[in-house]
Length: 134
View 1 (cartoon, rainbow, N blue to C red):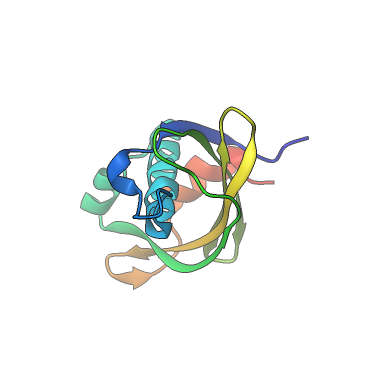
View 2: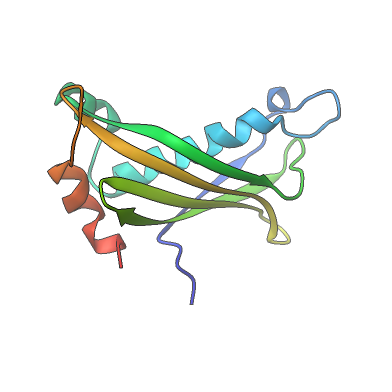
């Protein structure tokens, strides 16, 4: 059984590729961030509205593994599942090339919340993520 709780389908744009014709490594971070923002929306939260409330989820640490390259016009699926350890949310994010389900990228992205500029728990995030945590 898959642990994934959310997925988003996207397509590689030509300007995201380097001279070798593969996606530049930094763009995978954009893909995973966009997936997390879409997940927030699906949970009923807005990243911008949370910021206006004084609650900012910020990346504290990343562990990244590049497995197989994506190329221009490739369609891919970005999937995630998450866990909470103390005040940290850990997003486990995998990117697969759509046609053959080849794993292209794996990342564990740890986020923490700043509430009014101070490291703290967020009741809004805890409530929104509760159905997806084991």
